[in-house]
Amino acid sequence: MSRLEVGAKAPRFTLRDHRGDTVSSTSLIGQRFVLYFYPEDDTPGCTVEACGFRDEWSALSELGVPVLGVSPDDAASHAAFREKYALPFNLLSDPTKETMAAYGAYGEKVLYGKKVVGVIRSTFVVGPTGLIEHAWYGPRTAGHAQRVRAALEA
Image (spheres, rainbow, N blue to C red):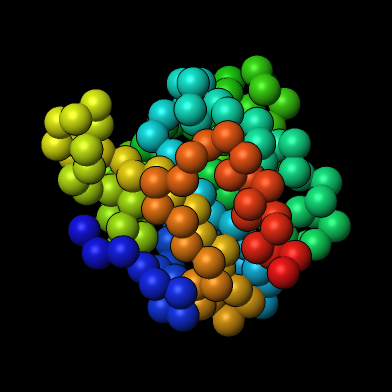
């Protein structure tokens, strides 16, 4: 797994959202956006993180920065997760984990003291020219969305 550094070109992606619609990174060229990768819908840490972005939604919207969450879950799971927690942003499905791997968000990690292969919680701010402006690998979920907003405002 190779991590993306600030200044690197963000890998392109085309994924399906919770409605089954296609979302492509090329449609986001010219604007900043937050792309965050998480292991699984409706699990404790992932819910804390998603609700954090929900709670920061109005501030991020005022900054003109859309949020996209990505996990291996399917559209039905994403739709239920969005509805249950009133999540206002798109959730994208990456069942092959190719996009996650391209961002360094899938690979070997330590979980409960054991090495496993899985989704590595990661967040990126991609700038209008497609370059990584901020990158977080393995962030603590509580307060993470606030730290992302603060970085965007700095």
